[in-house]
Length: 631
Image (cartoon, rainbow, N blue to C red):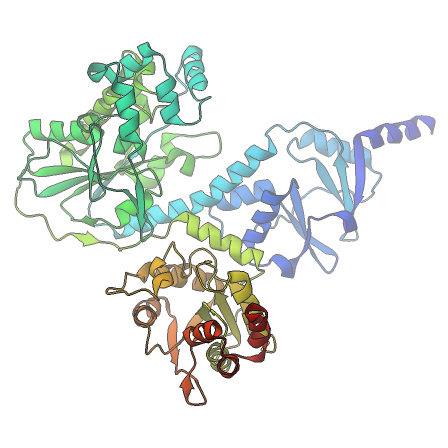
């Protein structure tokens, strides 16, 4: 008995029992059913390794961070609840818990369940992680993004009508010697690659730069490099026009000096910094060397297009006008996308893309006499010698697709004129979760987007009319703080002015509904505008992302007889939103004592301190808030 009590006491020093009521990792099934992002967010925001799913106290199963990884990695459709798991029935059964921990090294708690009810967990007090929690979370985040990447490539492959070749470009190779790995690790201590380049020894710089090296080279290169500017339009990032000793860029493409004038077909090069040639001159890029191979072998009918970028590169190939007679080359990180964690293999990518996948270009650096001289801090940040090797392989791979015909290429087709990057989708997944929103089956859901500068009787009338036609109405108040009234005041006016309407949920619009990111001209409406900018992208995001997540089937707008910008926005809504199954319903303006109500009139009345007119144009709740402003 003494030995047994001693044994329990010893184990109590290693383990602790935590009651279910004290756990933050227990969810009722109706809280998370169909809300996979809620589970993902729990793991990202906490150090919990497991969450428990219950139904009125009865345990239905659990979800581990590993289950979430497999859900994203395997592109599973079913909700990832694990119903086969180990547990103990006695909160003091540390011996059985110990055996579980000896067998399962990655989990450090075991549930205590009796009669299907969760009593709590036995948890290890002190343990060493085989993989850090930061690394686990980073891997989970990467897999979630990879899910989107894989679907993006699937859609592109399904729609593109041209030959497409895919290449990997790893940052390092397992064949590197210990000394070589240490050299790169030392260089990577400087996080900014330009600073790393500047900080290299004179001998290393001379080896990297080659025949163009001079004492003033780095000074000039740094000056030129800092002139590069990324410009975003409709979700696609391209470099702005630039002309200096190192870089020549026009219309988003880097100049390829040796393109034949008679070329009518194109070889498109897409990818990140290596494709663009961040650390080399125009005549040292992959595109330049590939064009040389093309020209030397009698294919002067082809132009190599350097469409490399450094951000959201996926949008570039979706928005180019590509002919079936063109060839498309995409350099990306495919092995991490399709291989199991820590087991990056070319074979896994080959199973997806077949013979269109041409392997890992990083292996070419082993053919270089002095590979460390040809890179700054990783293989993708390489010099002209590596670029020439890459171009040689690309030419060998595409030679079977080249044609000597020099007639006009078949009609060029742009798949779409916009691209919604992962950042936007991830933002609204977080947004929906943070505001407790989700699609509600069987309920007709509508939306109104308003600036409410300030909230008027016209806004109130539009909301009332919309409520009469839907079960749920989301009122998105423009969050961009570029109006007469601050956002926090405007959204409070709307909340106060609609609190009696039970169908209404008032929400901030977020970063991508009528914002400087999507429709900057909206905030210049009171200036003289001769031409209205394109606002399609704002509405594409609403239709494709926001409405899709919330099940919005109709959007309500007020008639706009005066303002040219808003009127054009309404017309664009009617053109675009039906593509997503969204009906646009226009509501006639309301009159107050024969006068059309508008926020512009209210602002003028505030400036003139015309109290009577203000009271005619806004609801009492707004009047109370405006009196504070007037005082």
